[in-house]
Length: 187
Image (cartoon, rainbow, N blue to C red; front, top):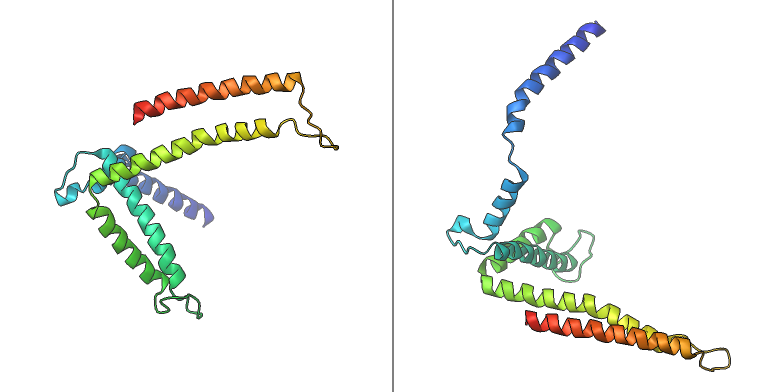
């Protein structure tokens, strides 16, 4: 009896495998899925083809950001069924999801591509300046505090540490000059 079940299982597995081969071969590739997502962000289904694929991607990201912010605020304001929340006690989580999705969709669809590109350029500039500026500020702070003072309050600087500070300051000056050039090219 056990052997016949094993044979039946093997036959069913073989048949299902043979039936599933065409569906596996017909599966969309990752590239076609990504193109579909970008087409949705470009609003091609509405007949408003903008031609800016970057704008489409930014529109999707803005939708996600707006949805997240609205959902977080509405969830904090809504009730949890236990008397919690400080605003709309009647608003449940599933209702907050719908409201946040509608508001995010309206905002993302109505926002022009030029505004999206300007927002992304502003954030990209701010983040790059922070990423480049933090090490410079950190090294400058380190130079002011290094090598420190002894227990009597005397400075522990000698000629070697002063030379190292001069070399590091020259390196920082070179980095800032390169940053000024590249930022001038961008702006």
